[in-house]
Every structure is written in structure tokens, then in C-alpha cells.
Image (cartoon, rainbow, N blue to C red; front, side, top):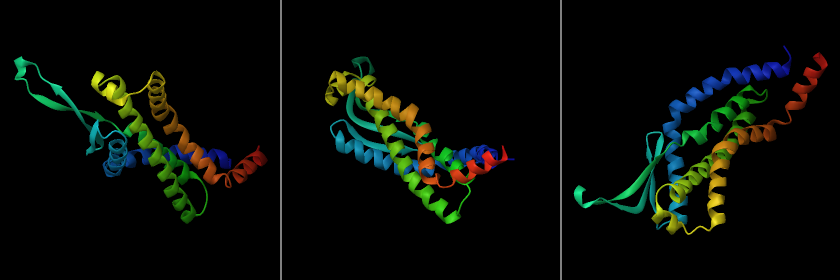
Length: 198
């Protein structure tokens, strides 16, 4: 078996293990993500967002926006909150981890590169979750939230683009780019040996 095929097979074998471990341990990673996103969003939009809290491996965004009930329901008022699933932005972590584990090289170097890569992937997750919060506030929560954001027409387009970028493009692409940038020194040997065998 060529080194390239062996590498691809190892990636395929590591993927389900990494995904299972990530899913069952995701509750441990959601807390720091909630803290970072909460600090960022309450700093940028303090009049709208009260806090972002962890709820298991999900997030709850608590706003200052008030919804009033009808007189038939007692006329009570309450804050608007909504739930998010941050896991749809975090699958980049097990993908990247499987690539690192399958790459030949020194264990200590791989661990250091993996830690650096995960810091970058945390930024990807923060971007994705923050973009989704803005998308919900701008388009789905109501006119009050949309007015408080004060976006221009281009601002709404930017929010929609950021959401698409954060949910569809960055999670699958960034881990591969990080891995390629960190381990390109190992790739020529694998490709050279494969070319020699062909």
C-alpha cells in the first residue's frame, strides 16, 4: 500500500473515533465557547444581549428584548431568549484531529501543532456562533431587534454573508488549511514515495 493510501485510510479510521469523542466531550468545550461569545456579543451589543449561557452542549442567548403577552394571557412581559446548537460549527475539531493523528511525525510536535490549530478553530466557532446570533436578531427575532442593530442594507447583506461563511465554508475548509500549513513538511516524502511506487 502506498504511503498516500495508507494516510487516507488512517484518516478514515480516525474520523469516527474523533467524532465520537468530540460529541461526547462537547459539553466540556461549550462552556469556554459560551464565555467568549457572551463577552464579545455583550461588549458589542450591550443594549440587546444580556448574556450567552451554556445549556448542556447547547447555548442560550438571553436578550434585553421584551415581549408582551396579550391581555387575555394576563398582560405579562418577558425577555426574549433563543437556543443555538454550536456543534454545527465545531465539527472542524474532530476533522482536524483525525488529520493530525494520521500524519506521520514526532508526537510532541504533533501535540503542539494540534493545540495551536485548536485555538484557530475556536476562533472559527466563535465567528460562526456570533454570525448566527446576528442573523437571528436581524432577520428572525423582530423589528425591535432589527432596529436596535441599526444596520444599513449593506449591513444586512454582510450579516447574511457572514452566516453563510461561518456555517458552510469555514468549518470544513479551515481545518484542512491549518493541517496543510502545519504539516506540509511531511507531505513531500509521502507524495515522493507514492510517485516512486507508481
